Length: 146
Length: 146
DNA sequence: GCCAAAATCATCCGAAATGATGACGACAGA
DNA sequence: TCTGTCGTCATCATTTCGGATGATTTTGGC
Image: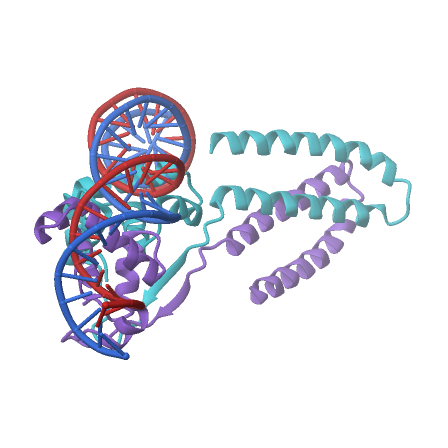
């Protein structure tokens, strides 16, 4: 960014010098003012467009996100206990991570849908999640899911 | 695009008229030429910058690249094309995988919630998913997500 | 310039999910 | 035996999602 400003300033300086020089050439000609003004306008308009484009070039901010590295997944029981997440709740979380709906999970675990809702609500609360996708994301970060 | 050119032309015309008028005001003053040239330069530079901004639409892309301690994730572009998933759709899918709601995604991408819904609906359809959690799961299996 | 694809936005409606509570039985440990 | 945790189930209100469709604008390639 600083470089752009520098270049802009430099080019501006050169142009001014140039214009200062051309000024005396055109001053004697009729309607020179219009020509001079037009030239200036066009020049700086182009320059402005170029500057605008430069400044708004897509900025790609690279953010480093740490990811659990181990291939063989081992449950982080410490974290699980810290958060007070029970076996059943973790079980439900795992099934959620697999993309199942509450109904499907209920069927798989042979319990009612309401029960699944309770478990999921609890685990969301303990994880600090507001959505199941977020719960899955956090679950992975905490080493509760592979 | 056409509208921009039109507006640009119109504003340009008005400015020229304005400058023509100011021309006679400043002509009698010493160093008027420099002032006139400077004004023109600044005006059109600003105009150019504005035009440049309009044409490029501020798109500040924040890309989060996971620097995992293992295999660096590479997008399976083949699969992406096979499924006909566009960039924007993939972008939305990534944000869904991060646990964001449609509303949050809309805010982050500077588009309406309806647009996000359209993108997600399309990507679900292309992936064969019925839920966002399932879409995330499938996305990972297909190598579209890390 | 023209055209197809992509991106944008909207509306309607039903389904799914979430939040907040309350309740009840089983069971383990103090 | 009493207490606390866990698992189970339920109701009600609200929010979020997902599906179906139609429309307009932008983009990108020819």
